[in-house]
Length: 115
Length: 111
Image 1 (cartoon, helix red, strand yellow):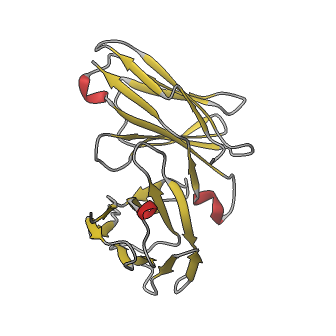
Image 2: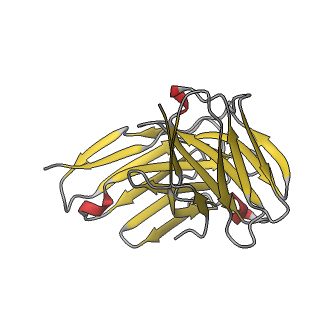
């Protein structure tokens, strides 16, 4: 158990809908990262937050947005869903400082299926 | 931009065999991380390397930080069925601690 939690575990929805994925980082971790992994693909970095502020953006679609709250949990919002958005979405967190800040710890993921 | 090239893309192994895989880049990295992902699960950090030339073990797994700082190697000795999965290498892109990821090496047990 990495200490990172994600809810829900599975989500099935229809095209055009909007969903929210939730992540709670490990205790003490200030950085949260969101990744998308389509079937048999690698990890695509979406966005990073550090202590409530956006720190880095990857190939995140405009239909997707995220935020990190004062209690450090984070939410990823996906709107106007398309079939191609079906994927595993992972959240990871890392320690705040030092070389070990590069070590990211992953949650169990949310499997999104868009029908 | 920075890229990590992992090879091989996939490996068919027999139980008991030793396994080697590597990760290379045209850029220098100060940290190399190796993760394993089981199907449908989140990646799990196996080994972190911080010094050029460093050799670190975690059970039957041994990873090395290449002296040129442009490559890293992961070896698994005496493989067992639960070693099956995808192994990813990763390194930090910049001071934001964003990681660059290799495409993964898929380990499959021969029937």
